Length: 578
Image (cartoon, rainbow, N blue to C red; front, side, top):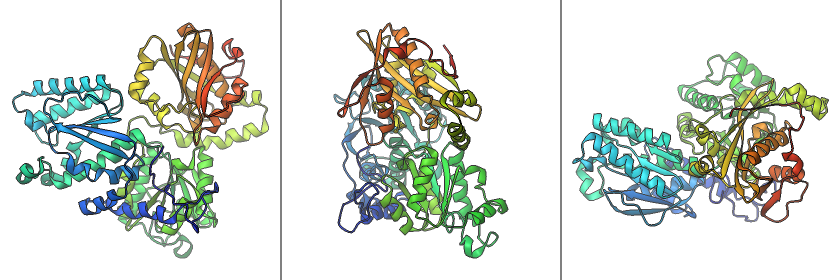
């Protein structure tokens, strides 16, 4: 994704460390977003500090279109700081005040409906809900892209009912989200509103609510639509998740303060939502193993950790090794460390690595980790990911010892496919948007685009789930296709990193192609492909599967006829749910 991403900026100036690919990365470019974290993740955001951070933020190519009936300018002025840090820079276009929510002539890449519902006093409770939801449905029908609506921060039954209706609308509507001003109001209490200044500012919201709204919009919502996901945490130990140095203070001497316990608890919460955890520490491996055995008071347990990179080598090497163990790119990893020097070293040598300074206090780090953009905030997470990763070692051992047929037979893999599963819309969009290594066309479909494939007679989606005798990998692949003449054109083929390395790509794709050709009445199949910075595994697979080289930057490559003729004969159980 173009634009700024924490740990990614570089100037190429002489004397800067190399990034491992021959390019130079500026240490100053890495330090700047690290230094901004105090302002961006502050318990009480400060406008002056945020405006300072916003001045250097890129404008971006995307547009956020704001439809409103009260002032948004206060939030818009600080929004670039948050969006720039999140790697999702956007221009903000604010419309005129409009209680009627007329449809704009041109659509932006995303839309925010920013309303003060107190202005609709002439409507009774039911009429208010019906009218607002009706206008939102009209907006959704008029344009694709994320559609976000702020809910009501006001107390009372009228607004509770409205907020419930908005939540239900977002649940059933593709690419929709609610900006939870009610949650912000619960935290801020009486600071939510500043009625005395409303005439001057154009909004009843107080300064604290405005700044918190901008942060939530950027970090919790827009980042989810437009930034690469954080799939793993690379966590330091000494003076990061406890106070003290293990090698000096010993197992019982390092101190678990309340703030450090809060940081560990935040790490555990993300682990329970499917984010992988690696310990990356300069210590003796035996000492670390004993630490986690002995310290029953630690919220972070050994079972929460999926990779142990404990050595005296460079942190950059350790992060790369963890990413390789997880079968993900390093740009899907967030490194948490109290040492700025270690963060800069790793960020300079591992392009795209996200960086989080565990300071000035552990409480600051815990709050920042809760808010960090790119971490999974939707319901579509896979809590069994750590167990699946743990099973990879045994899978790799089997692969070394057995030939392909024996390996698949020993693995006892089962593929469960579904055709056009409307109930999986959110997960299908997530696979398209967030898969990087095996993403053949990089179409990055959102939920509105996925709906087109689910609902049209000339299109289809195949959704694949995978399990084997070692673990359940869950939802791992999606194929989006349409009929063009007598050809089934695969517009998007994505396979999660969790499914790679098991020699199952050919089986799942061929099975989906055969069903797709039959369902749409096609005679042949072809894959759309596009070359990107990280999807070499997909391109290499396509060239091997089709027997044709992929030349240039993008194109269409025909699938071999043999892939459509019948079951592969591989010792894999294949089931269709419909």
